[in-house]
Every structure is written in C-alpha cells, then in structure tokens.
Image (tube, rainbow, N blue to C red):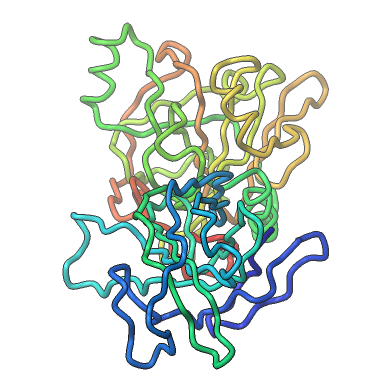
Length: 377
C-alpha cells in the first residue's frame, strides 16, 4: 500500500487512480513525541501502555523519492494498533555548515495497514540522500488521544538515483529550450599543457576515461559512477567554429566529429541543469556500441535517436556525415572510451581562460523552474 503525497501544508495531494493509497497520512504527528518517548505537552498522547514495539526494521524498494518499510512485532496487543508513527530524518553530515539551519524532521502518521508500507513524498525525500528512520505503534482512543509504544531502533538507508522515467521528464524540459540546430565539425577538449604532457608520457598518448564528478542534478545516475572523457561541441553563431575562450585551460584538443560520433556509437541523455545563471547545460553520453559504457547507459539513461533529436545529430548527406548541435543550451559530451591524441590536434587557444564558466562539481540551482522536476533535486 502506498502513502499519498503531501504538500507543504500537510494536505494530501491528488494521487493517480492506479495507486493503492493510504488516505489518512498526515503531519499531525509533528511534535507528538521524540524518539526517547518524551511527549509534547500539546500532543494529546495518553499515558503509555504496552503496545508492541517494532523491531527488525526492513527498508526495501528504494527509489529517489520513495521506499517500502516493514518490521516485526509481538502479537500481544497487536489488534489494538490503529496507527503507525514514522520518524524520518536526514542523517547529519559532520562536514555540514554548523550555522545552517537544520532540516525539519518529518514525522508521519498512517493508519495500521498490512506491511510492507510504501512511503512516498518528493518534498521530504531527496535523491542520493542518507536518512534515519524509527517507528512507533499507536492506538487512537475514543477521546482522540493516542496510546503509543516505545520507539523502535533507529536504522539508516540512502535513497536512489533518478530512474529513466525521471530523466525522461528532464529530457522533455530540456527539449523545450534547446533552440534551433547549428552545424559543427569537431569535438574539442580544453586542458592545461601539463595534462597533455602527462597523457603522452604516462598513458601512451591516449586520454583515459575518469569518473564523472558530482556536477549537475543531485539525482543523476551518472555522477560519481560513469567513466568517460568530457568534450564540448558548441560553436559560435557567427563563425561556426568553437569559441576561443575556455574555462578549463589554454590548450585544446580537437577531433573530427565523425571519429567519436558515428553509426557505431549510441547517444544517451544524461542530465539537464543550471548553476544559478541564465545558461542551461545538457549532458550527453556517446558510447561505442557494446562497450562497458554503452551497457552502463543502456540500463540507466534514455537513449536518443542519433539522427533525430533536439540536441546533437549525425546524418548522412550525399555520402558525407553532417553534424548539428542545439544553439540555446551548452552541451557537455561524455565519450566513454579512451581517445588517442594522434586522432586529432593539440594547439593553444588565442582567447582567455574564463574560470567562472567552469562546471566542475557545480551545484544545480534547486529553485529553477526550467530544469527541475518534482522528485527532489
């Protein structure tokens, strides 16, 4: 059974007909009592009587904004249980800002239903976030007071990444602002001179994939997991060539587009985000067919039609491969296999290194209505 979604006022929002929901979940349990059993003076909870204490808590079917919870309890007085109280809190981060206000704990009340029970709520559950949870059984009396058990043990769990369904929602939002398509002929990667010297000396001239950082959406399934090499492909409107400025270094590796993106590769949508600016970024993944990167993406990311999508296309015209990119978003392309420097050229750019435009470990703006969906950030 599934708990209905709640809005910030504590009122249940409409749920889809396919959901088997518990219609009595509310936030009336806030301030009812803490995990030590200390009751608020205004809580309306009667003196504690013996009710079964939940134990052996199990969390399963974890997604980015829901989980199933079940537990064991003694059969004694089990028939008197009318409600469950669930105390859900974000796990404290030792490195968090000591002066930042703490997250308000979420205490949920649900009628006693067969277990496991689904807890769902995008406004109090965020992707890839550690939580603690404890459970209490309760019996509502005729006068409205509650008799409650002691709290269960506290257990920890971590919510999951965005699913393909969530990423498809992001994809559809990104399509709205992608704009018209411009021609491109090369992919390029900017770094410092020392980087390219290191690649030549230590890696036999081949740039190696590395694990993607945590930039972008907090729930992105590629952050900290997918290995690849970042490339850019945006061009200047007036020249049709890559911009001369770069956030990442004064030396640029350029490679013909067809050497990375061709009928032997698959294209995937990875993310859509902004960094408190008017600019929006779309992350795409190019993976050689059948490669480990391809298998990783196939399970987690929406696949795009390489010939027909709103971001990056590869088509054949008169026997020649022609490439286009979206004008109104900044594309970050991840190629999942090693790339040898001999396949392209390395040269110093004539423009400036603009560090402020770097997206390394950039945090997504959670308030932007253009690039956020209702499943956490």
